[in-house]
Amino acid sequence: NLDNIEGNIRFDNIVFEYEKGRPALKGISLDVHAGQSIAFVGHTGSGKSTMINLLCRFYDPVEGRVLIDGKDIRDIHLQSLRSQIGIVLQDTFIFSGTIRDNIRFGRLDATDEEVEIAAKAVNAHEFIAGLPDGYETEVQERGSVLSMGQRQLISFARALLADPRVLILDEATASIDTETELKIQEALKTLLFGRTSFIIAHRLSTIRHADNIVVMDHGRIMEQGNHDEL
Ligand code: ATP
Ligand code: MG
Image (cartoon, rainbow, N blue to C red):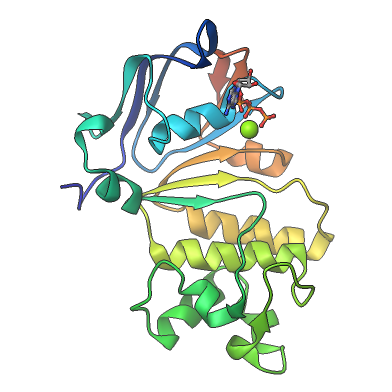
């Protein structure tokens, strides 16, 4: 029942607490137009991850609603909601198997060609093709075949192939060499294009490119605007 969403998202007067009497979000309203990229910034404990948790419906708000295209997400089938949301987490998830299988994770029907197109689009093809077994290279969950940056690019390829309308990205803080960093920034632009995205941002370059930077503090939005406005 959520096949063709546009991706307009509204947090409408959200109050949320994990523990009674200790609100983590204290009345948050935020309007996001389809295709916009939002960067959440703020100190530890300010509520950034909690916003994401509510959007994915890991929890429901105590007060207020989260709406997608005007529809309360509590009225949307959970499977249907989650199928529209792609998540790229900080601690990039790589499982034991081939690189191809890792990219195809959410799209088992994808052809070899589609996998490679996605990899090319996010600057991952070059290093994959340079490995002795290419796309058939076996990687381990915690193995060292791939660098942090390469793991990140694979997770981008995976997200691009899944093609969700809404993308959540918890940006890695790990130090990555300058060349890979540039590849990641470029890939990020491709990945975000045309999607509504929420980025828990750590890199200044990412923050600079966001349509709306939302500064959170103690469960409230302190200010918002683009890089020029703030
Ligand atoms: P960080 O930058 O450290 O990731 P954050 O901005 O993502 O911080 P949240 O994780 O959203 O912050 O936390 C907001 C508040 O909710 C904090 O006071 C935190 O201690 C509390 N909190 C977060 N997760 C839980 C949980 N699972 N159970 C209880 N309290 C939680
Ligand atoms: Mg967090």
